[in-house]
Image 1 (cartoon, rainbow, N blue to C red):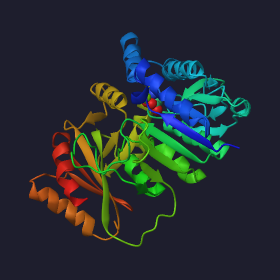
Image 2 (image 1 turned 90 degrees about the vertical axis):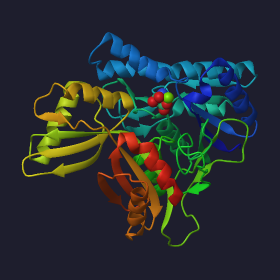
Image 3 (image 1 turned 90 degrees about the horizontal axis):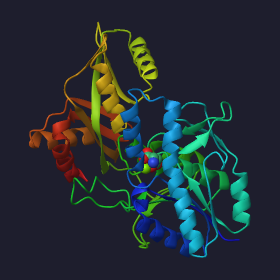
Length: 395
Ligand code: ASP
Ligand code: MG
């Protein structure tokens, strides 16, 4: 029996026909030694273009219709990859999320996977075919509707399949060939990290690392799926391995820097914070805006301040919407968070270092937020890159 590997190819690695052919050649080659389930994202910036299209025909596109529209992106990739593989003499067959038995809850645009019953995939693998699976999508068994898993959700499709099949490992293959100490586009000296545990990577993705969908790491931890983040080219050496049981003792050490580029502060006239949050959620529901990621909440005697972030298009939609809403006022400054993921965060050392390094460069932190594995500063968005560059000296 050949070992079963789940591979996920990101949108950038499938951006044009040439890239699709080169990914297919790589898959065909690897299928000689492995059984493969290949999860694909939409080609290049297809998902963004589809969202633009929706916004051109509707002020508040319904979430159900958004799912019908966005799932098309991954269907294009899956069928093209399958065609290219068959041309190379490598038998392959593509499936949508619903054909593959990815069952989700009945929400739209950010649905959660509840179960995986991949009967058709089992049959195809038994027939020695490479399975190509459209990422980012499923079906609700309750409503029979097609659903999507949130921006970047193909990673979560891949991990769910790896868990369902108890695969050897789940490989997330990208044009950025590893998890880095910081965004290499901002910090030229950023280094690839060879090994991480699940908690470290969860913390990084929670605080904005785009390298993986947060939920995919959470699921991998729950189901003990070994993750490998590596290059989609044929280089096999570099990459980051994520598994449990790394060989280390206690330390106070900075591991990586991550950032949420755009964080909004919302001033709510409501002093009961639970009610403020509920009112905000109701507003987003009514306007068909997916609820973003909450980062921080501050209560004063007569109001509540809520800080949140999310995918670019969601945050922009919120900005637009709040301009005309009584009861909510957008704090005019755009914020960012910058987070140092570290070990030893319970000692004050890391927080002190972060604040010292920033003071050295005359950079101002609006808030300091602490957790078990990270030190986060809220800063003005215009200073984000400088903060990242200066804090990278810690690593
Ligand atoms: N194509 C979707 C997106 O861009 C899903 C994914 O890439 O994982 O968000
Ligand atoms: Mg994509």
